[in-house]
Length: 128
Image (cartoon, rainbow, N blue to C red; front, side):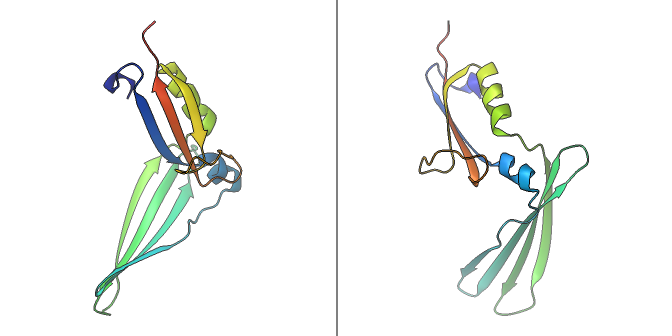
């Protein structure tokens, strides 16, 4: 990402707050629903905590049209749950400075124990 930015360019990264996810080992995220005319969707999202420290992020999508039977689909992605200090360190090593962390897109301060997200704004350092 640093190579794609000019010196002084800004990087904005949005990520789940994995400090919170890992400390509470909460497997389930709140369900989400969506409706457009006669189509309905339900999204159930949950984690599997793997022995190697990785997570498997699962999304179960239920969809139906015109009140018919629900159709289901599961998609899973393995990921490494990077915590705030790991991401900040990686950004610094990559040459970013002025790194600011927020808990949401409205710039609430990041709280590892309560923020749902980790939003990072970092500036690519100028060549020295």
